[in-house]
Length: 84
Image (tube, rainbow, N blue to C red):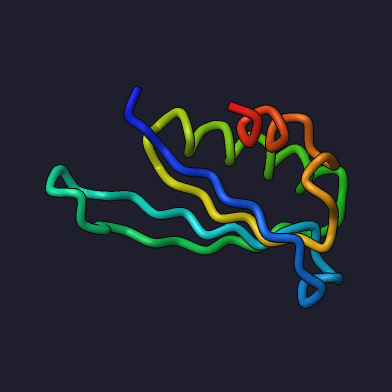
């Protein structure tokens, strides 16, 4: 597994959403190859999608930057990766 970075920002600007996440993939030279941003609504379905997407990205070597109005401990998956 490649080394990946997860960052978490508690912000007030996304109060109507569960989270906004920016995913960054790098090429073999270490330069950004693809950047994608996804918004997750504050629903049970998007909560499950957020946790699955975060885990898939980090296990695939894709960096994640998460912005949410919630504390990081709202998600066991996010909290586990932040603790590593």
